[in-house]
Length: 213
Ligand SMILES: CC(C)(COP(=O)(O)OP(=O)(O)OC[C@H]1O[C@@H](n2cnc3c(N)ncnc32)[C@H](O)[C@@H]1OP(=O)(O)O)[C@@H](O)C(=O)NCCC(=O)NCCS
Image (cartoon, rainbow, N blue to C red; front, side):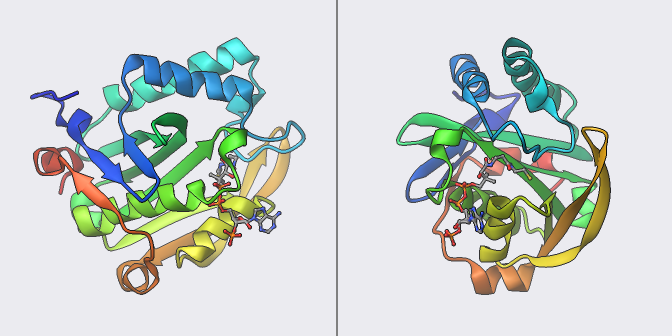
């Protein structure tokens, strides 16, 4: 899908196994359906906003509305790109990358989830590597940050594998309880040392003004 006025629909990131891009409506619906089928075990809550506690139909709608809200509120000063992750052409999950005042701050933050049946196969590592490549190689970022609950072993393992360093704990209220989030940071030189996943970017030139880049 190519558009003149919203060129982000032409942006594609490719890794050995994955394609990341904005979804067509039916593909966004597939992502919503994955959330109905399950993102994590019910006794854990990896998200600060516990959207996966919603009843299934509301949860699915919230996935779609969140996606549209991020597009609708986009400005070069404050953006969040919610990419859908395709594994062998099938919707497997979502990977976001966003920034505020990127033109000056040069820092991105990321977030992600996969349908449960796609977890634990290295997909999470590959998709994070894809958006780090977009940030550092494509947009000339200087820093990338992320965070996950201290007990989120998979997310924290992905961050460590890609070279992020621990960057302090944040205290959060989740499901009316205090939880600790592990923050991580990755600077440009460390990304250059630790990158292992080959990533191709297509269609970026027309999008650069959207990122404030
Ligand atoms: C977080 C998430 C995106 C990671 O994706 P993934 O495809 O499962 O991750 P990968 O398979 O690429 O890597 C997971 C790593 O964590 C490690 N890991 C997983 N569970 C672990 C555990 N209990 N203890 C230690 N390491 C663990 C794996 O061994 C793997 O490392 P390795 O490749 O060196 O063996 C995915 O698990 C997910 O969607 N989880 C639910 C939602 C979520 O937590 N989102 C993030 C919120 S911050």
